[in-house]
Image (tube, rainbow, N blue to C red; front, side, top):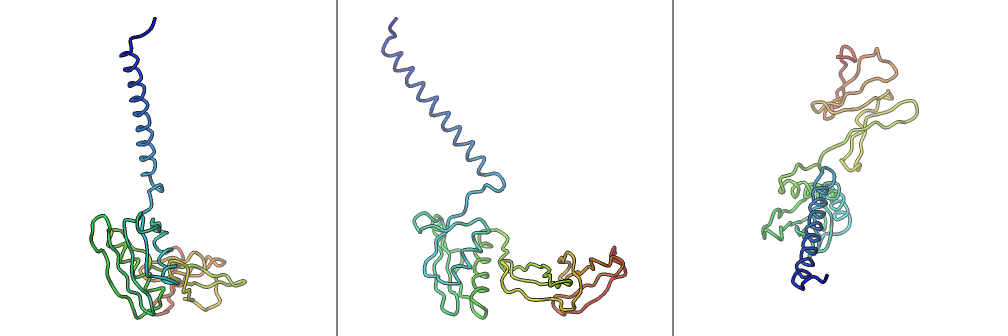
Length: 207
């Protein structure tokens, strides 16, 4: 039996609508997946006028904090400036049409200037900056090891201890580095002040 033409049209329309709804459902599921921890979409930024080491540092600083560099047309945040001994940088929110950061940085290496600018930008977005923080690690040199600190990206490392001893698990504790002997568990651990370099011993490793 041949169906009336209006029923054929209705059936076709229903098929299209249900297919569209299914596609939309798939899109929403994919969006939900992307919003999960570790799957956030990157924040798009562009940079102009900044070059060389300053740009390299800035790209790394922002990349590890969830940003991605693209062209000015696709980016939400536009970074502009110059670097010739000192860094002058500005960030504009293209969507909100407002300036978030506009500042000149000087008096330190170009790396530190770029770190400071990245921190100001991230903080302006209500996030916690990390670019001027430090990391602590031990450096093994044969039978002994020493405590080192460095910028968060591994640059500008410097020794905190130089006493040819054994280091285990350096950690931050109230701006004091704790150095625990690894081979001699009965020996009291030594604390080395990061600023003063003063060494003190505690009563027992468990204290």
